[in-house]
Amino acid sequence: MNSRQRIVLRFGLLALLLLCLVPPWVTTYQVSIVRHPWTRPDGYGLIFAPPPPDTATYGGVQGVEADYPRLAVEVLALAAAVGIVFLAVGDARVVKPRTDAG
Image 1: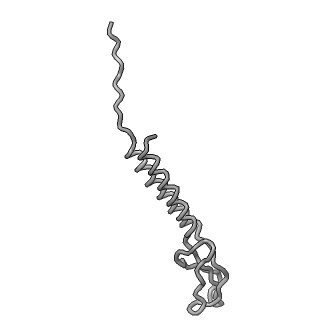
Image 2 (image 1 turned 60 degrees about the vertical axis):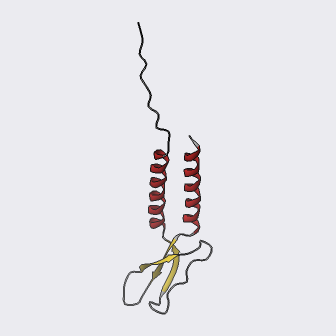
């Protein structure tokens, strides 16, 4: 592993930390007209302070929680991007086959 690859890994870990500190949120609503609760994406917010639900428009808020499926997609996309860049900045050494001179 060379120094450029270490930089890519550090950048990837920092980006992962930021993704987990500011996750996407989803709000669950239960309205009397609709039989089953429904969810609506609610943007991004700090893990310690989720965004407030929009009770004025929809009412019947059951709760706000992190949108884990969307966060998982973001983490996988980040892992793929870091992996591609990690391989791209690696040493491109060509190994020459050994020839046995008789």
